[in-house]
Image (cartoon, rainbow, N blue to C red; front, side, top):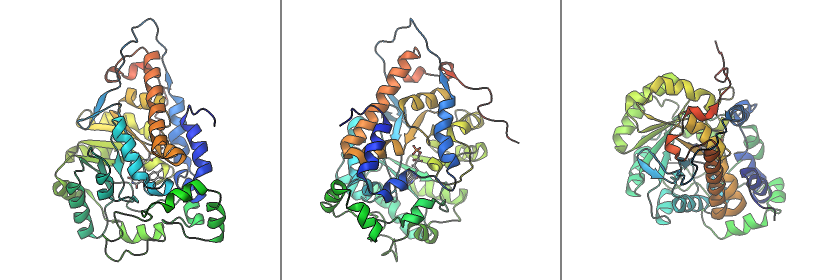
Length: 387
Ligand SMILES: Cc1cc2nc3c(=O)[nH]c(=O)nc-3n(C[C@H](O)[C@H](O)[C@H](O)COP(=O)(O)O)c2cc1C
């Protein structure tokens, strides 16, 4: 086997091992995928200042996110269908994150339930909520998260309606996969994945099936989302949910300075500058490009994090140096999970941590908490001159 040194190495193995339907689900953006691509390529526009003859010994990446101590300021983002990338995938990812000392966020659309993940971990994790029309279901899932000891609620605000990803429609994405002739032909080549899936009973959406009314058939994700997700979600709903939850609240999916100010006014613990990894509004600017104007709008009234497009420790450093207090990674750890299960998630985190540490040192810094804009070379027109 090749020596794994990058997140891309993990992605190549992931592509070979996981059924095409689930690989495509991860590796898609909406419509033309312009925003999906920009999220990654805009990081490449930012360069780093090489410094020399400064003490680079005794370095530390330890920091905090929303008051929680972290080994590095990187949290695992909520990712739906994780338990279809690898059997019991959410439990594996949560365990890898816990051992590493970074937060794990469980998605509403997970295969393993909140209770399942709690039973297989010993530290509290975070839970991401999609707001559904069924208020009773929402109230109930908030209560379940509290009972399971969830330590922060991540409210995702950029998916009231589902962006169209062509491949998911063409593949008939579902959990468990529907057995059509082409799915069967593809599954036949993924014996390791299939063998592990046969060992677990967790094959559908554990937080939803059996908990939401009239949900027996979630065959089509797109029609189910259209029926269940609440398109009316507004700031009043967010305030009501904040009250109901009563704990640490992170608002995810903010990409506009005006929305960031509303979020800061509401008094949440952090906001995540995010375009959902390019999966929702195609044509939106990349998160890293929107970060400066959002930081300018909210100042230090709220902790500002970023996700979308992070594929390396260098990207983490760039985001942090530009002013994001922390980041979330989605695909970067899913590649690892699909490639090698729990060990693969650990590998993703190790790769990112090593790249972050070495790059920080070569930029002449020893403590992640002292890294600032000074280490970056950002093109003058980076944010763009948009009318
Ligand atoms: C396959 C996939 C599934 C996702 N599912 C969810 C989800 O269930 N809830 C959510 O809030 N965000 C979801 N996201 C968005 C991620 O939380 C995160 O914003 C995104 O992955 C960041 O971009 P990156 O993948 O480039 O790191 C998903 C992303 C991917 C790639």
